[in-house]
Amino acid sequence: MAIQGALPVEFGTVFPHGAYALGVEAITDFETKRQQTDKTSGLPLWAVEVIDADPEARGKAKSVKVKVAAEVCPTLPDEVPGLPFRPAEFEQMSVMPYVDESGRRPRVAYSLRARGVKAPNASGRKAASANAGAAKDAA
Image (cartoon, rainbow, N blue to C red; front, side):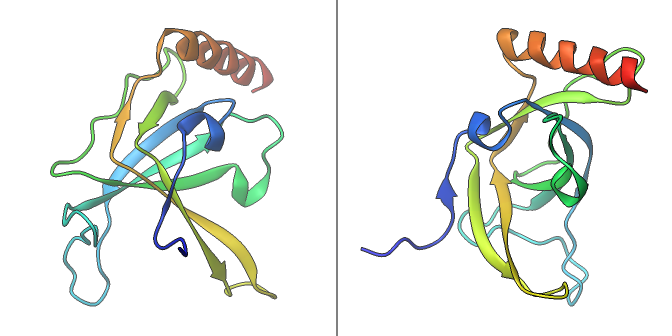
């Protein structure tokens, strides 16, 4: 049986060092000027801009967008005091590989999707707070 569609993946596999949500916006279809909907669930799609907390992430890999299928705009967790970062975890994540031909040569890229956004659990929150402190010290 061939794999079709997105592959389910755990949040910690995609973001082993955690992630910070910067903002969320509706994804608009450029042709119809309406909000895009998820082909599987029919729910509206929202784009959450995310910074990967991995200190080794660089360039395009540092900032990504995760598409969230939800009836209403997802509510992001609270900011870390003194920083514009919101430690976040995504629920029911999936990844869809595709060929990105927009650069000088084609490359494999990944579209990330989720069904929800939440604050990290207690152990994740401690790691996120430590990473946020390190980010503040570095700035």
